[in-house]
Length: 373
Image 1 (cartoon, helix red, strand yellow):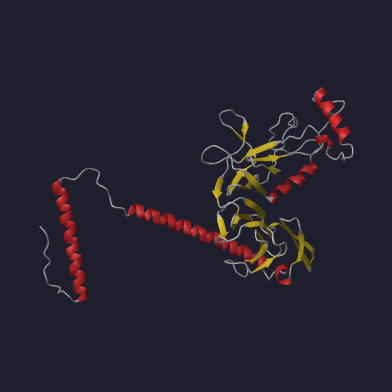
Image 2: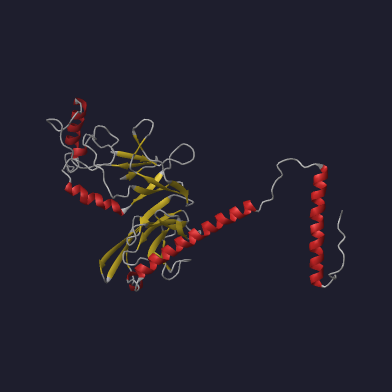
């Protein structure tokens, strides 16, 4: 799977295709055959691992990251596909070789085999864009009701969430439905199917890399442009990082954790100078606290409930404002009707004024109110 700056997500099939001709070149013309032979002679020292893809490198499915408003595509940077797609791997092993389990093929020259419908697979995925959008769309094609052809699905939603390119979209290794987006000067934690459940305040330095901890559900690392790494422990605090460590004088470009054993976890850090730093994660950041997995799951659920509560409250307040708005007359008032309405309003004011003065002890109950007639 690849994502392009042009706004497309492409799916490729790099498995060996069945040869359709004597030389295994199918319908390639004589010119293509000569080019292939020339390339083999020129690059004879290159391993032939992927030689079967020569002159056949074409995507089998292209999903555009369309904008919801207006024409054009979102320039892609990174994608996150649900780990439920691992189901495909086990199902593919039971299928006959040469019959790839594809839901949709966009290239007729590769779609000779009958597509196999995969069940129980989440076909939706997230894409981070160069303009800071988070796009949630489906890579499964839909049938156009008018033409009857298979067309790409429109995005479910596209949210402008970061003030800069989205560098990372990382799913939690403990919760498949929880993932983190990092871009610009902020990071956010999302729940698939829900809205944003946690977001950091704007930082003074751009965020350039991120990684979840492999051993603790509530810990993750954020790489910054100034060469520092922020360590966030949500079991400790959520408004600021638990600790910060300077690694390099240049921007951190990648963070990769590696679990050596139950007693040793390493963190590989790459910077903009091309230097690799190997750090050992301390015991407090690699050893989970008791019931941390359950506690973090409850924490994310509470955040979702809190957001739903505020959404319902805001919707109810808007409804109350609309209901309490003054009714505009459907027809123009005559001068007599307007005068009568103003008198009534002024008399109500005089009555309330007297009640207020009585409570203050400045007037008596039996003092008359001079109403306007």
